[in-house]
Image (cartoon, rainbow, N blue to C red; front, top):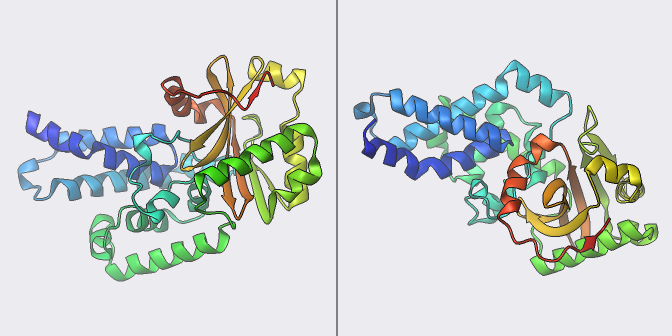
Length: 312
């Protein structure tokens, strides 16, 4: 392959990776899809491709759809054992992030909701909301009619809006303050204060420290508070499981505030929050090692500052 063709692909690699991540919810799978797209680009008769960006987007999107429709993916995701892979803010795979819709489309809350859509609905939602493609362009990418694209978009937006918690965009300083208060209450035994920091329709989703076969889901302030209190209670068994004494840092993950648990500089868990109106609307706890690889890699290049809790 000549250098011009390689340069054409590399110029769009970041956009393709961001698209694939939103579609698949996994950075590792997104990278594989982008590499497969490159192999298709390498083998293509490029003289017959009028608009390389459109061609690459079409190939990458359909490779992602093939993965979503595969028997293995359907089994894993339908088994309820799937949470999107968290990414540290600043990761190029999170872009674009110029508009509210683009930023929201990559939050763990929305990525988790997208799991409930059909592959076609998910693709149309991502292409439309995160990348601002027209319905005519989406129709060409997915080989469907414009009317079908519009219908998929309507159904996707309706389902996402219906199941969204009361969280959303929050001022970073106030969101950090809420999470700090939440963490202090969770680790101190102040259950009444913890309950007061939760919205009436709060939800919590966890992979059970990476050990549960199915996702653990909690609703209602009392049940979420009970789950959080148990989860943040330090015990010798938890320290052994984590590999040592933990330090807890505040960070931003997928555009929302998060608590990152670290042992010896290695990320062993993360809890991402949605905050709205001064309260926690939802939280997502991830500790499965395979879901933390990219976050851990980024953490090694990140200046975490002073932990909010040390020696947990």
